[in-house]
Amino acid sequence: MLTNKLGITDSAKLAKEEERISKRKAKELFENGMLDKLQAGTFSSLKAIHKYLFEDIYDFAGEIRTVNLSKGNFRFAPVMYLQAAIDNIDKMPQSTFEQIVEKYVEMNVAHPFREGNGRSTRIWLDLIFKKELCKVIDWSKVDKDDYLLAMERSPIKDTEIKHILKAALTDEIDSREVYMKGIDHSYYYEGYTTFKAEEL
View (cartoon, rainbow, N blue to C red):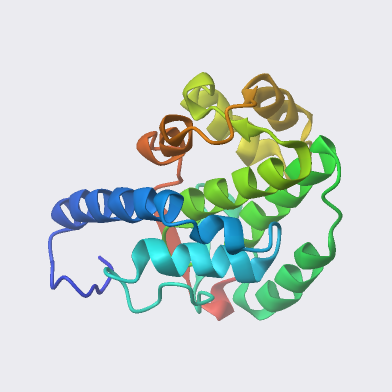
């Protein structure tokens, strides 16, 4: 149960409110033009997106996590190496579809925030696609289970996730409906386990 600004102590209620508020804030992000002012592909832009989505819910909005996280048998970047990982991701090229997805995969492995990585990073990914390729992902064309399995395997082999995302590319870059599908669909990882540094 995450400490939150809403004073909610029930995890199911928090999840419901988090979804409601983050969807509203994501819609605002699209409509107020803030996304167009961000530098696509940088961690500073991802931080700004995360902060905007979650600042009404969590004190840690836009802040790099201070706990180690895992999903199933997969452990995300340890806290002690997280900043170095982020710095390296910032330097990665993003001119081609393949490079953009590789950058996205590395940011997923980094998992820089305590909560809300999936939603924030999908918006960040679309921002890169929009700037570099004049495309975005239509997430309604991405099967949730296929996506999650492909993302779990992507640090070892990213061919699968590249295939899934390429098939879902669209040139409807100014469609709010297409944009919101990345928030509406619950593709983000759930069931984190938090480890102390000495347990890794």
